[in-house]
Image (tube, rainbow over all chains, first blue to last red; front, side, top):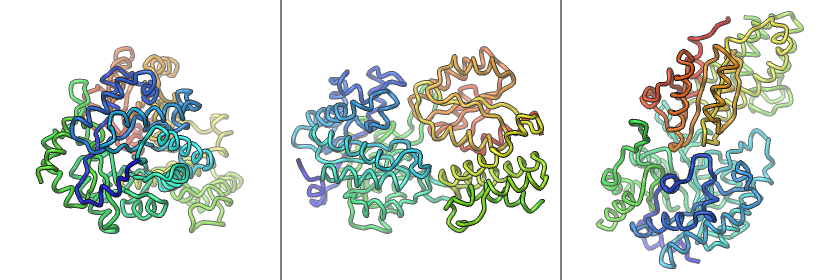
Length: 294
Length: 223
């Protein structure tokens, strides 16, 4: 197991991966099917996606386990296979990354709103612990708790994952720009509030992903850097806001568009840069080339 | 406006459910929507007046949400407060004393299991006086067609979160419009834009729950 934090201390920005879901669909995953089940039923397809990002020049890749909490898997009747599917996810990315690259186990929110009191905190915490432990068993170096919007769920997930694994943890939130021009998650959390809370809960790396293209991500990183100048910041940007053209979903930001702005994102304070919805190996390759040229 | 009615409206806007609710903090220990609506009915305030207060309260919080001054938690609590009032109004609906503005059939499209956005729309639209028929998530086109068949004159709302299910949304709009050309269809969800909605052939697009309620307002059949 390698330390991502030690690698970041060397000062060079690291390149992460891009989208996974879209490539699973390209390879035949049907809408309404469980993406994590593919870790066992279509292992070679998932391996191919992981490898495509390593080949593109990523320093670290994530895992096909975003919806792998028992709570999310329950929607497919697969809650009791959480350990198996997450371990497989970790092992696939580990195999693709080899020992020279980092693997962060992806963990997404459950969709449960703790404030409504419908699901007990302990149940969710237990689920996150099962998922985190299985990813560790699969061979990940750290965990990436991504696209959270509620502080209570994110902090609970961080504590549960940390207690279960002791691994380094990155935590990212998804922000949207309000009419007043401020960034908030759908639960009303600002980048500044997120930063304080998730660090307190034990996150080693903080950041933002999804929902926004590079332009907004630069503003969000600046907001984080206003209250924190030392914690490493991870950014997974969308290739802009999707357009719907002739029955197809199209993302407006090309690999060169993203590469052209990466300097600005790093100057704002980002340390790890990758993509989210609408990005692929071509985006990551362009980012990697732009970063290494600096 | 009657003092109790104004209080009900305020409790909904602030998400104050009842005396026991600790939310919002500044109203802790005070009576809420539950108590005030019971008192209003006992005092002889018309159910339609109470319903209008619900409407106004939801509209206020919905507008704040649209402006980015309130977020999902505030909206959820407002809906909870509204449900507390609705429990008291149920007998009047059953007796036909008060009527809904119309019927709204709502669901997340096939292949998409996300329900948060859909549920918020459902709450705000119900709070605006509509009868909402929630078909749930991963709703196949055939199920929407059945619902329209069984609820003539209803308006249909489609939700999607995934960029990968926007295609299923377009297909559902197309099927609905082919079989029921006059049925009004409104779409919404994070990856959508007004342009995408128009391309799909939908009649309306709502970027937030209040916008959906405002759109539906144009088709209200009862006061």
